[in-house]
Length: 360
Image 1 (cartoon, rainbow, N blue to C red):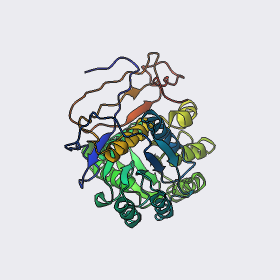
Image 2: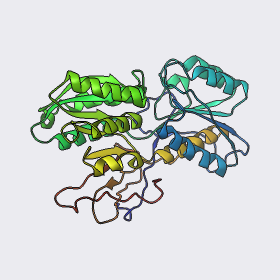
Image 3: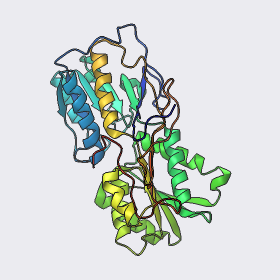
């Protein structure tokens, strides 16, 4: 059923056991799911890299949750998102007797041995955003289905380019990122649909979630593909870097851009015509749910007996407040939240307001 205008009920999905990380299945356990988490639990967030705006927000959500159940929150991590850069931090957290390690993996296999040692020492491991091999963790929090993300990204670039189509490229993060590789594979499958027959994917490159490298990759792509019509960047760092580069170049408005990004970073580029649309889920809720799931596991509770998934809001460039539609019940496939620029049927020159609670 529909939610009130401006409401946001985008709840990530929960996967547990040895199942993969795309389905949004519900965890089961015999423990009392309504029992409060233990107080004093040591919850550590280990993102792909520190000083990345995406993980700053997810970890903030985790910190809020940990404060609510009176745990001890910490955040540690590498400055670069390389495959094995998280290993030493996991080892240190294990030695410190951390109760829950919440991590977004730079590589699905590289940190498994370290996580196995942590679990042998009594820690619970929760992955979020980007999963490890399922055998290496206790539960995975899926921010949105891979199918929904892929379909949304292809749809947005198609709409931005128009009916004539053309060559497109993907600017991703790291080459080993589990989540983005899954999205890219599904984008390629999506592009096989008849409605996208005029779009041609000519390259996939990696900016390593580094703004400077991402801009260098964009520059190289524009030189190598003079007929390029669009860029998909399913990474908050990459899409912001690409937008900044395009905005100051001759390609502004000629090469279309979409991706996964924060309104606070990209709204200026929607306003000035660099891009027409982009998408993202509620990142802070992802961190919030991750912390509570970890606390539930560490307290011998069922982490998500009634987990649900909701259809996200659509942000439009119109006079009215954004509206959200949601549907509770069994988790199901849904696209991420979409930010859309003005169209001829809406008041031009306006950027839609943020939903309540969204950080500006």
